[in-house]
Amino acid sequence: MTALGTAPTPTRRPRRLARFGAPLAVALAVVAGVTTANAAPAAQAADNPYQRGPNPTASSIEASTGSFAIASTTVSRVAVSGFGGGTIYYPTSTAEGTFGAVAISPGFTALQSSIQWLGPRLASQGFVVFTIDTLTTYDQPDSRGRQLLAALDYLTTSSSVRSRIDSGRLGVIGHSMGGGGTLEAARSRPTLQAAVPLTGWNLTTNWSSLRVPTLVVGAQSDTIAPVAQHSIPFYNSLPTSLDRAYLELRGASHFAPNTANTTIAKYTLSWLKRFIDDDTRYEQFLCPLPSTNLSISAFRGNCPHLG
Image (cartoon, rainbow, N blue to C red; front, side, top):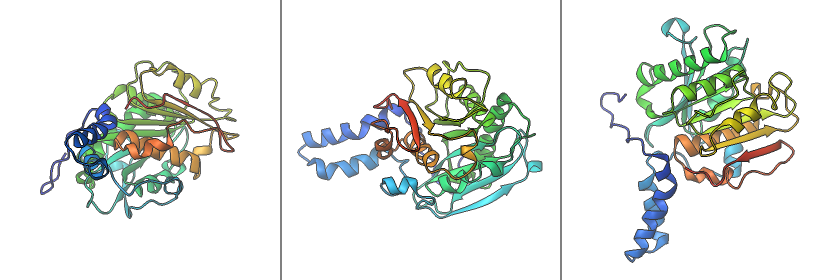
């Protein structure tokens, strides 16, 4: 939806063009006698109208605050239907254009406060982020999936920040049963651009029909949603042709996503940037696959990404 007085957002391009469009443009410029050094920046900018923010570095993706000043607004549960309200975090300036948006669900028995740290952290990197409460804290994954989609629909059609959002660039994130709901939402709405289930819990383990680029985050010492029963089967069942990755947090528990976590933040951010913003500048943090270290016990994926 476009607000009155604002330019329409660019039409969403197939993901495959994001990877190959700029190199092709540069190659044509070279054939025409223009140097690659001069042509590359212009070609890259022309190819990706969704790129936001400065060139990323290892430090910038690990920072607790990004380059965008942000504000927030509270959404009462009585003002919406289909989910329990929440908090929207958003960049205050639209000088670079509209932004992609993500909705984030908490887990079983939890409130939005349990995943709220991700709101300002991702918003300050150039996203509109909606941390939601569910209708009840006992809602199951399928219900949480529907609520994530209802929250995205509210964001793009009714919210006070709808004019800041490109409705063609949306994603979902969730913890525990919210992570299970993230998979449900992604399967139900294949037009989403990214999904990140965090230590997800869902009795369904076959996601072969899912078509949304998905980063599955598991925790090595999770006893509530053990990776062998949840995260690993989730990842393994995803189509091998899909952009997919599996990150396992070394020594972490099921509740690792409930407090600020640099590893979760940096790879979630890189995934959202790569697939919601088509921003290949962030591919360097995903390809080659990150090595195991003090915070990562496993990282799997198809690399280079099919993009």
